[in-house]
Image (tube, rainbow, N blue to C red; front, side):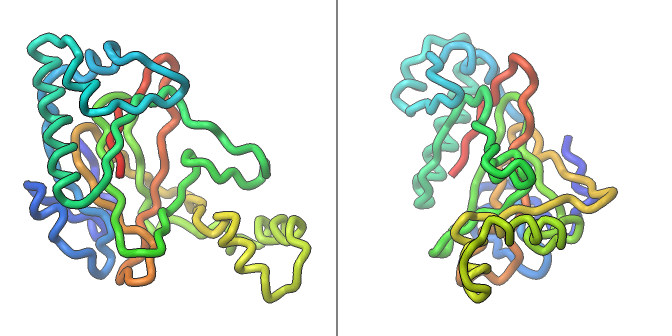
Length: 232
């Protein structure tokens, strides 16, 4: 169950993949959700995969070769189907078991890792697709409940201390170092969990976009529990 009430004007729900990819973003809508129920045991897949490092990518061939119970096979079937429909759409899905992401401590006052609320940017028209099958799920933040960090005076002042060029190059500096992609939740903001099993399409900042990009972040993982995430 996902509570969409904080962003009911931002999220549009559909019942199939065709509508997920063909429904246009417009107005305030910059997140589209194909609501689904998970079938099978996804934890079994997480346990059976040979992990390497903090993030392990599962290739389709490896997934097919896993020796699984009947419930594990049902979970695998759903994963393989998601691979197939996303690839047929032209996307390049990656299925990952995530223990944790690396955290950025280059600038303690301004982390730029995926645990920070951020938007995705592309030089060409594209969307972000993601689905969490096991573990903690990603979150989005309504645009109206977020502030671009580079516009917050005290943060902007700190960033100016890092910059040593002419004034007219400051905005380019922010973009080149991805500072302008990150957002801060306003007081009393209500982030929305994307839940388990739902396949999401999020708007990206690109030159032809007609809507605001969707602000989102990775969750902090529970101790000892990995996540199973497909993203592209």
